[in-house]
Image 1 (cartoon, rainbow, N blue to C red):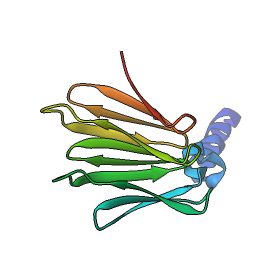
Image 2: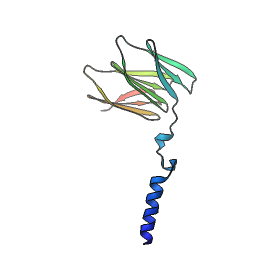
Image 3: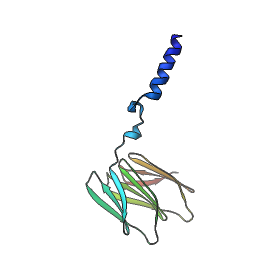
Image 4: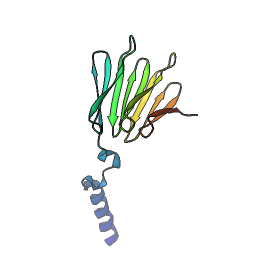
Length: 133
């Protein structure tokens, strides 16, 4: 009987506990906000307290955008752009012919994007894209 009470206590404690069991990703502060103005994609860096812009290419449209921690990612019809608060710059990879973005994940200092042809990672530490082998 004491074993059943202990199991019930653990079950209740685990499923009713407040944020003490929250994942680390819930605690990441966003240091960048992305918006669009006219023909520019703008990133506001809370760290540097200023705006950094990247111009749209002709006929380019935003498909999605996400920010978290030190990273801002923008997926367009022509490129995948990454902004790093640490390096304070935009870096991009051109999409290949017939390449379609499928899944975007953004965390504190890293982001990954999966397309129908490749997987790439972005690091806030060096502001670079790296394609998976």
